[in-house]
Length: 180
Image (cartoon, rainbow, N blue to C red; front, side, top):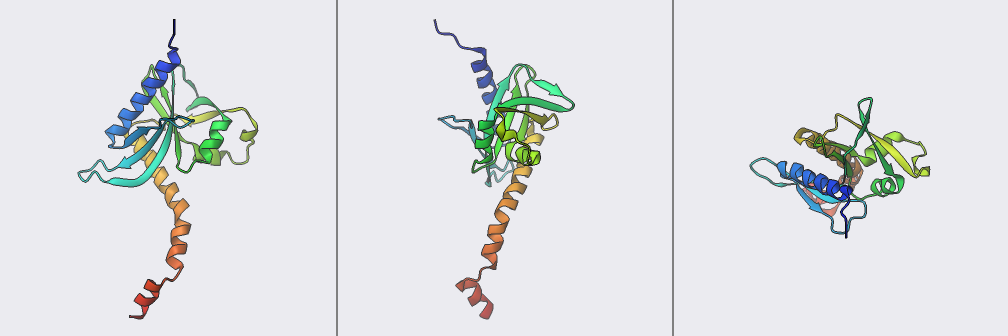
């Protein structure tokens, strides 16, 4: 007789919870059909009367657990470095969410920012790394909006050099406008 492990149920609970949290903000949280270390693609929309699409999107990997380790104001979560490398190189920011099922609490971490802060530590040489996620980075409406503000800043800093270079390159239209 086939058995369903508890981890399967925990993962489903975490995914359902995350989709509900995104929906509360009017964000679209689409599951990726073929999950290779990224569970969802999220597109942000305004929650105001206009409800327009915002230009920010990101990936989410959600991990459910029934036994979350804590220490000194952080949530400790081990993850294999192969996933970290993939997430660091992803086209969009990757948000890791760890959901503690019994307490119905989730914590978030922007992977690239976290790895950038580690600097030159040789984390890539290891099989796994225990992430230290701040307990204050809670998946709530306010927490997700704070995360989106971080994504917005990172997107701006990433895109700014290209935009500035484009603006500084004269085109026919800008040369024409300057003379007439």
